[in-house]
Length: 148
Image (cartoon, rainbow, N blue to C red):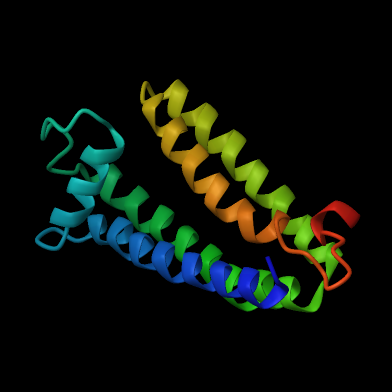
């Protein structure tokens, strides 16, 4: 995939995940938390309606998690995508490492919390995010991420 196509893909993913981050963060606000509770129920499959209403601690962690997730989306848009376009191997490598750190910690925590199905969602999201970072090719056909 071309650098411009890979960067566009990263920006599209950033926009999609930013909306998800806002839904996640909405769990902090009683009366505005319906979508967050529904998203939580989807991730904690099967769909059984047992995830809400949120406790005060769950609301607090929704605010923190949603904020951190949204900030990652801004980094994806403003740092990762331009790095892909410009062939900045150092930043692309850093992006790959940061996503792997997220995947390991989030997946281990999900298993520890008794929600191993979230590992499947994490794997899907990781694959989506790694695609523009690892499948981009310079005009010479040499992959940016492979040269990192």
